[in-house]
Image 1: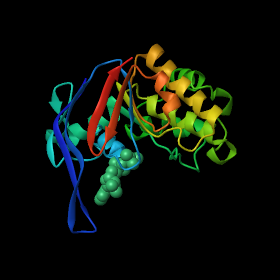
Image 2: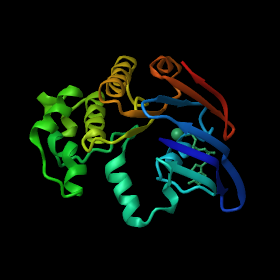
Image 3: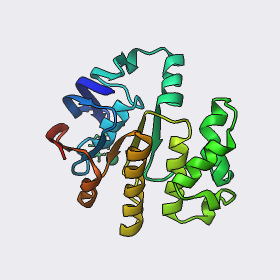
Image 4: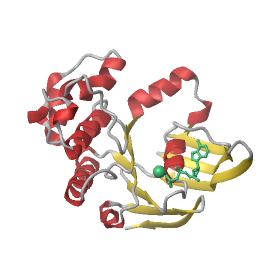
Amino acid sequence: MISCVNLTKKYLENNKNEITVIDNISLTIKTGEFLIITGPSGSGKTTFLYLLSGLETPSIGNVYFNKQDINEMSNKQKWQFRQNEIGFVFQNYHLIPTLNVFDNVCLPLLIKNEKIDIEKVNRILSLTKILDKAKSYPEQLSGGMQQRVAIARSLIHEPKVVFGDEPTGNLDKNKAEEIMQLFKKINQELKTTIVLVTHNLNHLTYATRIIELANARIIKDVRV
Ligand code: ADP
Ligand code: MG
């Protein structure tokens, strides 16, 4: 589904020294995988995730989504790719405070000018266990609940892949486990491919494949 070939990302540190954050990585992610990317802080996890999802552009190398090079897409194709094929979940939820849960979840559809199918929205709210919170506002919800809303929003357009950058990073142990269980359910029931970054080693048991990054390279790649 997603692959990268000789992927390299370099940044200028303090506008002078060039640092290599992703160093010549090639990888293929298959449909249906639950991939966890782990590794120490600064090892390049976020950058790698952003490159794979097209939020960052590579310095060298290519990223393919279903054989199409995402960095060769026209602006319109890129929009369509983001609006139809992928979902994203962040550590800090990034909900719109002035919209209630239902409207936050529907936002990707509103942006696409797509008609809201209330039953479909309710199915997603039910799957993510926030149906009873549909009229609540983000500030009325716990962090765990807010992340459920963000996950529902990432699913509403039925993407093929959901990316998550430390989605449990702000949650306590039990809430974090619940969120990981939810990702597992999404992977198994909706067959959505999941690519998550975490440095919580307790969460590796949820993955079907674990990749460990260190110093901008993959040092371990195991299927479990
Ligand atoms: P991780 O998510 O594993 O903590 P990151 O991908 O965020 O790692 O960062 C890897 C390295 O790249 C770090 O040294 C970071 O300072 C550097 N870096 C990340 N983004 C930028 C940027 N936009 N400009 C310069 N350096 C960056
Ligand atoms: Mg990071």
